[in-house]
Image 1: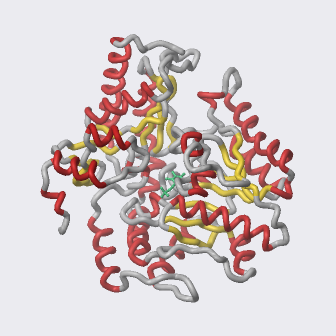
Image 2 (image 1 turned 180 degrees about the horizontal axis):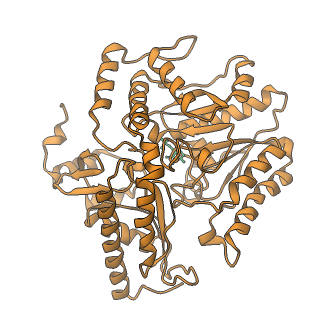
Length: 465
Ligand SMILES: *Cc1c(COP(=O)(O)O)cnc(C)c1O
């Protein structure tokens, strides 16, 4: 392979990285001073760095490697497709076999009323499509003012202008003049952090009704859609109380608001069903997909659209929207092979009946740790709330995220990738993880918690704020 840095020592790779590479979601000064961690290869659930460490990838890369790393079948699919047709577009009355086959397969796997797909290169682009699509949908029916999209605080829907506007991350809104107009945010169903003395079921209903209140405030004729992740991922793997989604569904139906389920993380088996729409009994009009669609082997995402919405779209002339790589043939061929593996190897059933329940039991045991307040999990995505005082669900006196960051660093030193979101730790391992590897994950997580706790006590930081 023509990759010179493959043959350089770590320090030289880091120097080149500092000299020429700008990183996403990273403090540029810090990474350049410290040197980036260099990942050189991966197989199954293990990644390997340039120093030869074997690290358990508890995050599936970035929530995406559902089938695990390094499967030859996907490399073969890409190789064959590049030789057959490396690129052609899907604009202006053309199509090609890989995109047709992929769309057919996705329609087969999606809920019965969803049979059309608009492709993008990732989740952010797909959500940008969704903004334009739902506004166009209402305008085409004589309602151009029905264009406000309601989302939630602490949601993540991507990093483009549209995606980051839909998201509810204040740090992102603070840079680049966001959100764009006509996107508003309501409170999230995060009982642990915001539920106070309320019972979770009551809290879930109360937070769902924030949607109804917002619709009433804006006027039904101005609201195009509500968008939400079935389980908030980047927000901290926040599994809503079970009263939440049924009430959201009712509100969208009663007020004729389109429901967009952002399934970028939850899709393709992660929650123990093909889509979390099944897990939570949601009936979306649009589902955003990416990540697990190709298990990260190629950049591809899209919007799965209900029959009703696609009929309106198709009956109203050109949709003046598209990406050069919408339905890219190589990415489509890779995604198709990934879906074949997910289906033929029974990975979704495996999550539902075998490895999911095992992970839930082992992960749940972390709640016994003196620093862990709760350890919720759904399928192959889970989180733990770090707290100095379980009974009151207290926060640390230190700034939010300081403790979580310490824990993440210790995890990495202990050969486990576990991410932190504030003072919450999150995991989303590949669906192919074995029971032995789950044991290793939980063992390393426990050790990291012990070391974090010891460090906090030594530094006088194990105190509530
Ligand atoms: C990752 C993510 C996105 C953005 O996807 P990209 O491929 O990074 O553009 C959108 N929505 C959710 C829920 C995500 O987790």
